[in-house]
Amino acid sequence: MTAISLSPRLSQIPRNVSWSPGIGAAGYSLRLLRSAPMPRVPDVPLPSSRSGPGVPDGEEAVLIAALRRGEDTAFASLLREHGAPLLATARRMLGCEEDARDALQDAFLSAFRAVHAFEGKSRLGTWLHRITVNSVLMKLRSRKRACERRMEDLVPHFTDDGHHVEPPCPFSDAAVRALQSSESRMILWRAIEQLPDAYREVIVLRDIEGLSTEEAGTHLGITANAIKIRLHRARQALRTLLGDCSEDLSP
Amino acid sequence: MTCREFAEFLDAWLAGLLPAEQAGAFRRHLAVCPHCVNYLDGYRRTVDAVEQLRAAETVPEEVPADLVRAILASRKES
Image 1 (cartoon, rainbow over the protein chains, first blue to last red):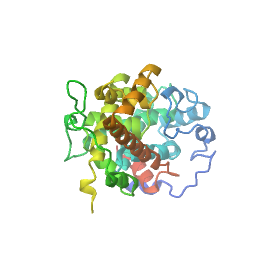
Image 2 (cartoon, chains in turn green, brown; image 1 turned 45 degrees about the vertical axis):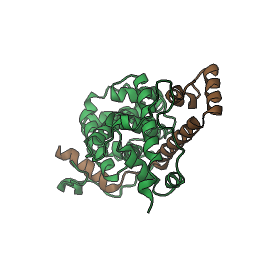
Image 3 (cartoon, rainbow over the protein chains, first blue to last red; image 1 turned 90 degrees about the vertical axis):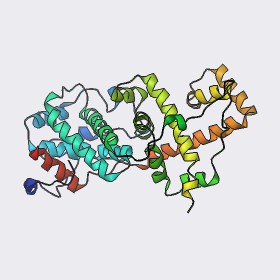
Image 4 (cartoon, each protein chain N blue to C red; image 1 turned 120 degrees about the horizontal axis):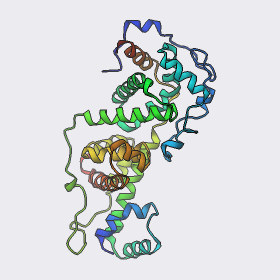
């Protein structure tokens, strides 16, 4: 499914609607929703504290009821109220605009379908973020990669008495410059894409999206301790890839 | 402390999660092991670079209008 599959019914959807705070498409007051935005990274707290109180307030309850009735304007409200930080999440975690748009579309379609099952135990923003992260992970896993490396080749090895088999070098000047240049984003993503899925996902959830160890564990279905171990190994592998990158960066 | 132990507990040490005694052993190892100084330097640069990647993606004002239309339209199709 792509984000550009426009339907003929599109003309029914108002374009250029002004969404001033406090007035939603169907007259819902959205001010309270705005007062509890998705937190920005880096220090994302646990889900219970992600966006204020753990249960929807009255304003959200009105919107949720309208969503359950299938009101078009309520879906538009949900998207416009909550979409922007979730698009940022998808962009951050995927590093690719096209994939981010696809993931956001998949996430909202999942949310639209699942709204009947939404029990109101968390805020809408929290719920939508969780769905978006799941869509992003599916997108991440589906990406074709030509260059996956073995972790064995990327983490340091030690002799029996605990010394480095290959003494580590400092980053070359070229590698340091590259990471400070406008190319750094591309260089980092190229390195991240070489990690096996299990490690790529942890780096993306923890270090790029800024989820807590516990949240990342919930998404991946592994323990917090496993997340910590994988994150460290993923960083070690990235260190190897980034430290070595000087060779193929010279113009 | 060996280089293996240094590498193993490096992230816990950077996060300030090691007890004082172990943290002291880390500092003493660093004072005598240039290899681990190099390793630490690269590890820090790596973590900083990923941190910058995270900070660079700010929240947009709104979802682009064409994407909003596409998502709402695909809901009706699905």
